[in-house]
Length: 98
Image (cartoon, rainbow, N blue to C red; front, side, top):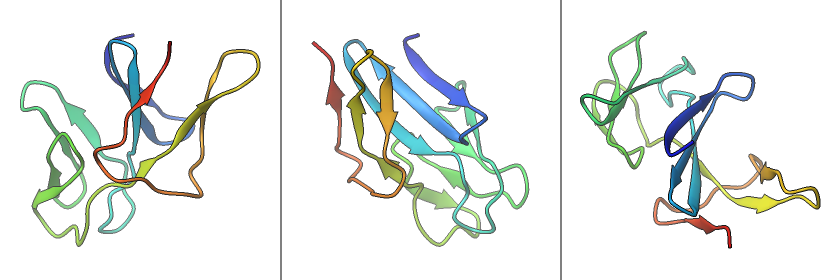
């Protein structure tokens, strides 16, 4: 669906904006807790130690030393999105599906 979607099995947020997607890690860069998307505030928040991240994953409050990781995407032969969590991409990355 459109918007921010949490995938708990992989601790990822899949964000869809029309035909474009990007994936942000839900793992806080402070001590590895799972962050939460707060739609009302438009930010990711760590419930453990208070780190807060802007919608692009950049930290702006709390002890997190760096932003949330962004991962590249591709489409499998059967049409599923595939995330490569072994690599990272800049926060400007978008994957478009025709």
